[in-house]
Image 1 (tube, rainbow, N blue to C red):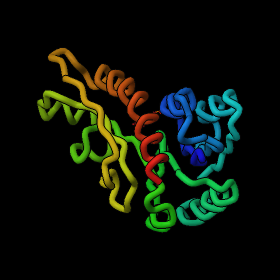
Image 2: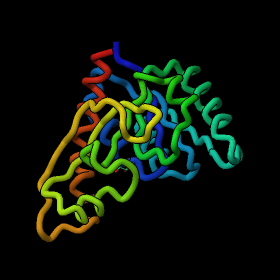
Image 3: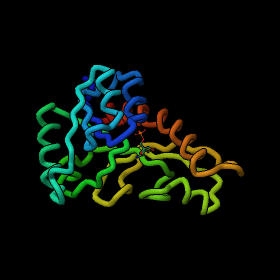
Length: 188
Ligand code: GRF
């Protein structure tokens, strides 16, 4: 049986697109939720015939858990088995992370455990690294530090900038995420 997947986004949704375009033989994306109402990724979902819902976090103010409770209710209602974060720009509270423990995955644009958090490409350059890449991992309470499900690497070139690195890493992400999500779905 294919695992029912929800993808959470906040923006462009190019990783969502890669997950939609891949051969979904182990998973099926049945729901896309964005906390940003005009995220372009919502249109990508609709174009693929997938239910797309905007759940704006702003009306919840500082009450992150109230937002997450409504999000959780939606996921449970749609019988979601795996939640895939793809450019979802909200830090999740322990409440949500624990509710979805072992079924919540993320893609991060660095070779974790190097460079959790933001500005990963600039930090790899500043450190003089010779290689860089991306990681698919399980989400735990501590940001960007759960079990690693897969990584893709590439060499950093002498003339690379943060922008060129971001562009090449993104291409790797689009190949890595569908593969890792499929393997993960089969392992459950
Ligand atoms: C990607 O670089 C991903 O690794 C990071 O956020 C970005 C999302 O891009 N978590 P997109 O919305 O999938 O195009």
